[in-house]
Amino acid sequence: MAHHQVIDAARKNGSGAGRDRWFEEIIGCSDRGRHFGVRRAANDLLHLLASSHWWISSGPKIGGLGGGGRPPDMTMHVTLAIQGDRQYHLRLDARGHVFEIVRGGDRSTSRPWLAPGQPVD
Image 1 (cartoon, rainbow, N blue to C red):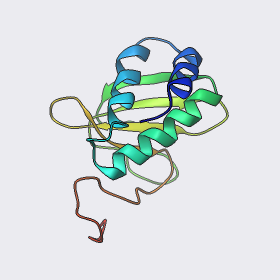
Image 2 (spheres, rainbow, N blue to C red; image 1 turned 120 degrees about the horizontal axis):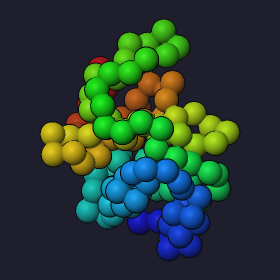
Image 3 (cartoon, rainbow, N blue to C red; image 1 turned 45 degrees about the vertical axis):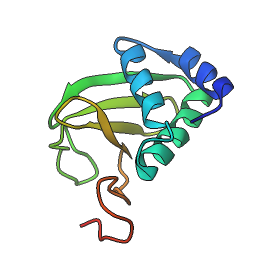
Image 4 (tube, rainbow, N blue to C red; image 1 turned 90 degrees about the vertical axis):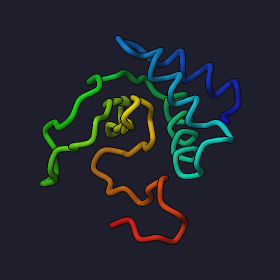
């Protein structure tokens, strides 16, 4: 889990509707009991949130505009925007909990539900 000072700074930098709900979800993803892939992504994201203003740019949805020639994300997700950086998708499972964090425009390099060494695609 990220250091409490990182979590406090990240919380203060956030704004907008849904901030608290999704911020707590990211903190939960950083816990030791979570899969390594999502835990690492959550800790990295918390460090970014601690250093820049951020907000939830769109709530839970399927689809969107895609971008960069890619199709829209057809997995239920929340879009989080960071000032001076790209957007991030908090991809949700059927219960509405984050199972993957993906930076917009980047191809996912891991799938937390796969065993290490298995191909992504």
